Image 1 (cartoon, one colour):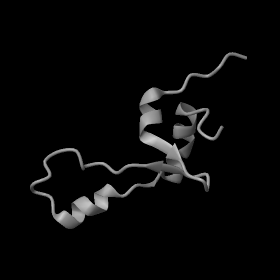
Image 2: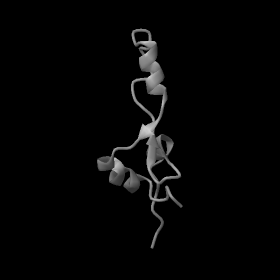
Image 3: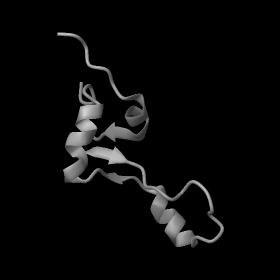
Image 4: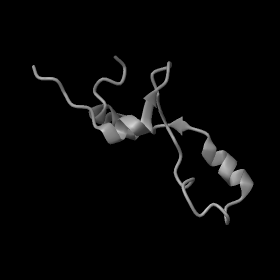
Length: 67
């Protein structure tokens, strides 16, 4: 069997947690930050978990995530 290539764009955006879930960063923190409240920007700093419906899509892009 040939090796499966990893999607490099996905590899930069997702990491595996020790519990087995997948970690992702939140959107809307890149630019136009002057009009956003400080509390909102602080909330966007934190990482969150990939939704269960999207886990299969991420696993397809990252075949060696847990190895």
